[in-house]
Length: 175
Image (spheres, one colour):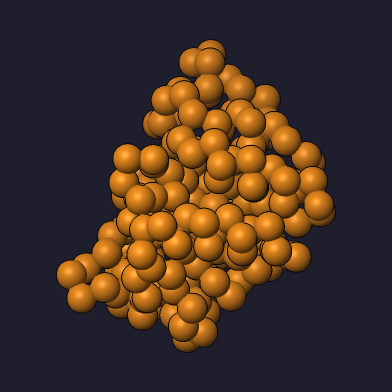
């Protein structure tokens, strides 16, 4: 089963907090990365992904992240892109990613307060730096117990299936 999750913020002690229902609600062990390493490290991990990538990005505003996700899909990695439905018209690179290779699946959800990307179910980067050039903070989560909680909770989000590509286009162009 492929899954995703929504991280809602980073609490002062460096632990990411998950909102929602089910077993994943609670605190997650996290490891802060220096800003210069965070996004670069993520892009390296995305380029090495073998099975799947789950990207939760409010608006897909970083071109380097969009290009990396699309390249991963071209290599055969399944990419599950979760975006804020209300921000589909905000510009950025949503269509670049969502209308790439057929191994990209797009989902639209409510509010996303912290962008995050999970690579092969074993590594998560979260923070505003994943969807913005202005704020480059990134936190890495590698704790297996935390990842399992996130994976279990995230299954609920993707259960209904992806948004058809034509609907993404309609949302993007306000039709």
